[in-house]
Image (cartoon, rainbow, N blue to C red; front, side, top):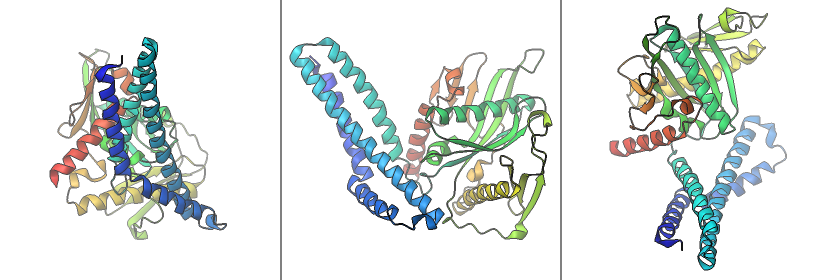
Length: 371
């Protein structure tokens, strides 16, 4: 017999899924999908590339969400049938299979529930991430590169495309800074909770005396803008510098001055892009990133919370959001949510979904408390 435990779990998951369906408003989603499908069928849709991408992108997200909810509802129905059949036949093997499937469904519903918490104005956008080394010298530069790899590995595990726009390598090891995009719906809403100072404690591989070293890196996450997001930047506010792209150790990887650096004088924001061979392409990409950062800055100023602007943190004690300790014990701990794990290797390999979920729930709780 399945007993009351498994029946109660199925009932609880059904209730949670029903709440999610109500929050997502499935009838409204279906109506919007129908409207977008009509827009897609218009022959001259691609005459306006920006609008076409917006329409097709939104349609893809809505169809994916609707299919995801439908599949979970079907899986819950199926597991209930499995349990009933196992009860009738007294089949312990089927019971075990049902238990296992129920665990997978539970995790999938939890992930979908977290998605419903991403309701901010720009949460559905792709994410632009900048990681910078902070205090700690070569260890900090190495740590910054470790964080960059961590987020790229996270994206790869979820099959999200990544595009690296700029990498400034440190002289001995690691990176001074890097900017890259994770091109997936809700990447910004999901990863924006990672903004802040990250701290690493370990035996330094760069110290010949084997001493413990504390180093810091800062992470900034901003949304990718659409052409309809108007951020007006006077030309006289921007200084444009061009230079030759370089790789690790300063080696040249481009024979022309195609890399572009934009400096926004009023804010001090600097954006560099060197991933394309064309100077014009790099300049256009740099302008998109600059506008995204200025949008975040503008919103922060409007809320009068300048400490949050751009994720532009000092990279030192006092404003940390997560600690990664490799010595004298192994632990990664989020200092806001208190979520922690001892599997540091998995975290640095991109297994950070539990940290992201805890961060999103923590942020929603803080927002509700502030109302």
